[in-house]
Image (cartoon, rainbow, N blue to C red; front, top):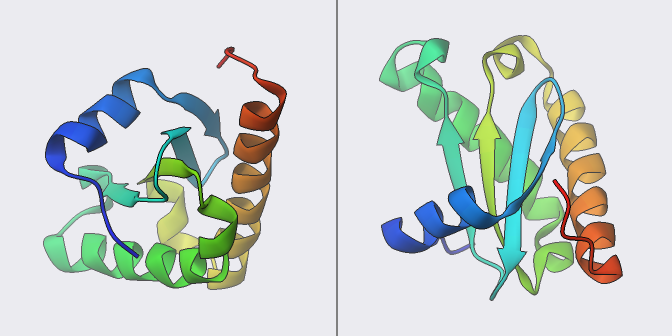
Length: 110
């Protein structure tokens, strides 16, 4: 799983289509399948943010094939800290499916 450059991350974040749920927010643009993860500082210390990043990265490993053709940023919200890994994976599955259908249908709305 390769992450986007800082410039590409900013481009995806600023121009990408967005889908949100209580735990995560995903933005996507057509691309090469790069994945960036941002974690809210409201979660707390660096160690706590890194733990959330690792949990999301593990969940994303299941869906890596589904992300081909899209560059994605995943923003982890504070509520994810108390969620189980299964809840995070389920929410990611929903968000990825929504992003795929939006880009497949050519929708330009947020």
